[in-house]
Length: 366
Image (cartoon, rainbow, N blue to C red; front, side, top):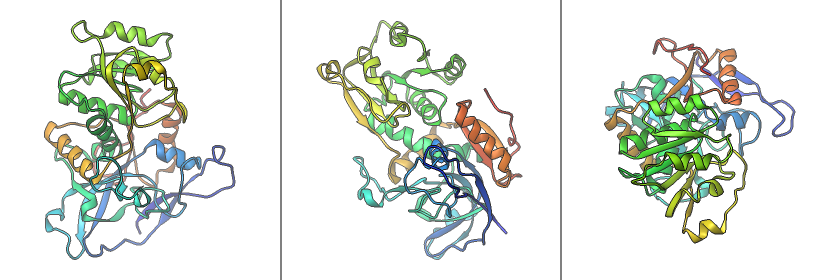
C-alpha cells in the first residue's frame, strides 16, 4: 500500500512544539475528470515545512501530506485529461487559486499552497497524488528527479520577485541578492545570470559566497561583518557604481543598508522577512524615490513561464542533499536539521522512488 508523510499532533505551544513526522498507509487514489494520477519520484523541503512542524504557519493539517514540491510521472489519466501527459514526467504547481493577475491572486480567499494545509488535501510527501492536469507542467527534459523536485516553490517565488516585481530582469542591470544559499536566492541568481544581469550576493558564510561566484555571481560580502554595505560599494564597477535592484528574503535592516547603494528610483523586491516581521523605512529612501515591493509565490501563468525559461536555458536547480525513501524518517529528520542549522546550499530533497536516480543519501554539505 502507498505511503504518505504527515505530522503527528502532540501538545505544545506554537514556536515551542516540534511535531514528529508520521508515515501512513493510504489507498492508491484514482483520477477523476480532468485529473492526472502522478507517481511521485522526488519531493523537496521548504522553510514553510519547518515552520509547519513548529506550528508557526497558518492553517496546518495533521491529515494532509506535507511538502509543496513534487516531481513524478503520470501513470493514469482521468476522463478529459490530455493524452499528451501519459507516461511523461511532470512538476507540480505548488500553489492553487491564482491564475494570471500580476498584481496578486484574483480572489485572495481562494489562494493557498499545497502541502500540510487544511485548505488543500494535496501534498508531495506521498507516493501517488491526483492533481488537475492544468496544475502540472511537463518537466524540462534535462532535469533529474531531484532537480525537478527542487524547482517549483523556490523557482516560482524567485521568478516573481525578480522578473515580475523587481522591474530589473534586464541584461546589464546590477542586482543584489541577499541570503545566498537559500533555495529562492539561488534560483534568483540562476535566473539573473541567464538574463545577463550583474549579480552580487550576501551571506553569513564566505564559503557560500564562493559557491555563488561559481554559479555566476560577480562577488559578495558577509553580512555579519560591520559596514558590509561599504565593502559591497567597493565591489561595484566604476562604469555602473549603483545597484538597480535588491532581491531580498530577510527584511530587517535591508533598507538602511542598501539605500546608499541603490540608484534613484531603485527597487527592493522583498519575498520574505526571516530576520523579523518588520523593517525600517527611512526618509533617505523616500528622497531617493526607492520602491519597496512585496512579493509572494506567484500565479499559474508565472509558474509556466518560469518552467519554460528553465527548459530554454537548461538551468539546473542547486540540490544541497538528498536522502532516499519516504519511509526514511531518520534521514528526513536530518534534512530538517540541516535547515535548522542553515547548513544547506540549495534544496533538501527526498528521493521517493529509490530507483529513480543514483544521487540519494548524499552526505551533508556544510
